[in-house]
Length: 78
Image (tube, rainbow, N blue to C red; front, side, top):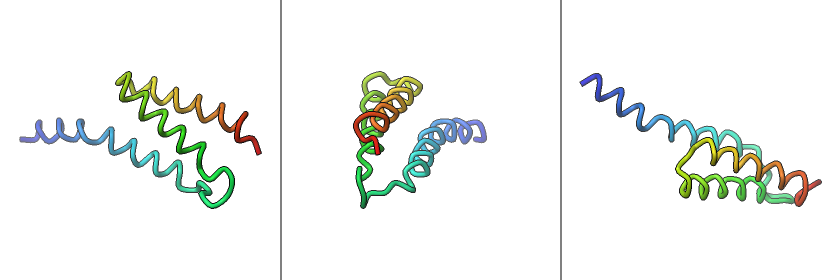
């Protein structure tokens, strides 16, 4: 019984931790002022789309990070 509990935790904890990290990262995003959180939303969407297509956590995190850095340095430069 204990072994199955650990298997279950190993199955559900990684996605739960990722959701907590995303919520933590976007907690101070200003949705009421320019750029209205568009950079964060676009980067999160890129992560989701790449993860659905490639099914690789590391590739999707890198794609989202690169997208975020490009957006804040070029298009949404303040």
